[in-house]
Length: 393
Ligand code: NDP
Ligand code: MG
Image (tube, rainbow, N blue to C red; front, side):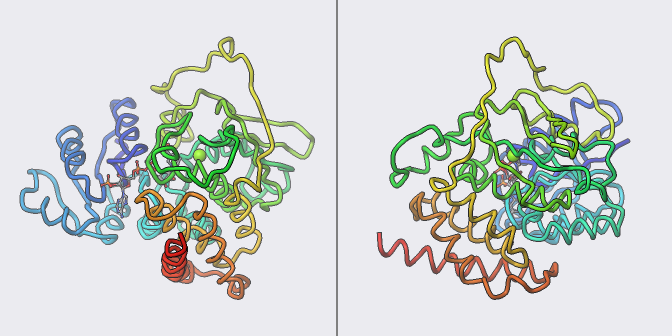
């Protein structure tokens, strides 16, 4: 029996992960679920999958739920503590982390130190301190299998190569991006509203990653995640705009041969693969019909129009606490943009200011605690910057 814990179960990836476990059928079980505050969705999931453990992050929601915990369910502590406990349960074989943002850092570390098979959608911790988390995973013999479609594609293309050999064998990584809702749109982006940014042309995802896709910060975060997951220099990562989202990324080897992974844009495939790896199983995703594809387009990204991409590469090159600061500043800016408190074009402005302010510290050696500290510092700095920009509006 494979016991699966799903962190962020009420989200877009989390809900699909529950379906994936159900699709895998006999021998697979959802052992525990975690969410933030959406009790309606969580209660429905509890009725459906009957988990043995639950974690609820938000204190008010946790308190409300704790008044009537269904029989057979153990409610763990609120906040990060309960999620970390869930991620390191003895009975858990696989931990799928699909919470949004840096809040997943502690639970991910707990899963690593409990030597779990980790299916990782939550990219933000890998941006903050991925290199150290990978070292920690090696030390504890935990496996991190990416869920995100592009890192999953690269992971699949690298099958058969020893992890220590990736840099020697790979000359380039083609990291594909749909381009988001504004790529083909001409004209200034100053008046972009949250509703427009939340309408993604290809993927249906949670609000934070959807906005990140519209600024192309998502691709920048993925570039840092990929650099860390596969120990590759960021200079080998080339972002390619590919509006059809059929080629999910590819790898060029030193002999010039390119392997790419293709499928229709459907997260159910990489979610399931991260669960079943190293095996494959029949998935709920539609198969690819090559005869229906009239064409595949590839283009260079416009770094000037989408400065977030440039900023992420800059943070990756600088290293140290810069990626953690970039990620935190972006989380704060995106949250404010969604709430109507910051303009679309001020998202990169906030990130740039925060990055500029952490310049001196970037060359210092990063530690796990340092990354978490940098996250708090950058949030504060980003909030101040965003307040100032709003004042000027
Ligand atoms: P959603 O916004 O749809 O879901 C987020 C989930 O995380 C919800 O279950 C939410 O709970 C939970 N959550 C949010 N904040 C907290 C918190 N503080 N404590 C505990 N749980 C919390 O996001 P997505 O599913 O779209 O994305 C999740 C992660 O996967 C992100 O890191 C994203 O970058 C990554 N990813 C997503 C893809 C996609 O297709 N959606 C593709 C590739 C990567 P509640 O509902 O209670 O708020
Ligand atoms: Mg992706």
